[in-house]
Length: 112
Image 1 (tube, one colour):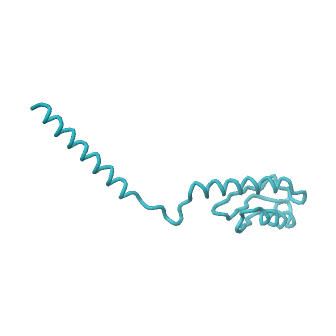
Image 2 (image 1 turned 90 degrees about the vertical axis):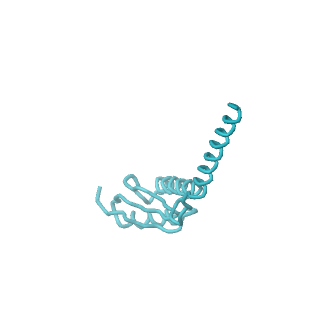
Image 3 (image 1 turned 135 degrees about the vertical axis):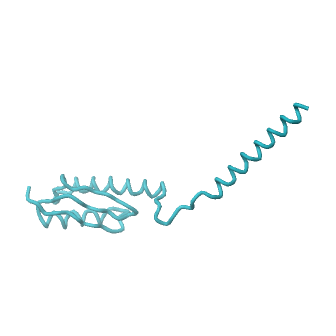
């Protein structure tokens, strides 16, 4: 008798666990169009790193005060540069980096 009751209890627990698991899987929110995939995040990180390296290597850009952020291929430049020439040169360097779709150049011109 105890064995049958034990089997019924175990069966009930298994059914409840299965139902909860199935519900959790079907009610999970679908990824939205604005969510970022892991692959996209890695690509954006790679772009940011490449942009920073290219800015540092550029002879015509004083880039020590330039901050770079990338989201879905769009690169934001913030910070300051000493001249309008540095600002436009920085934008040109960034536009030539593979994977960059567009550049939002918010650099301020401030004499050092």
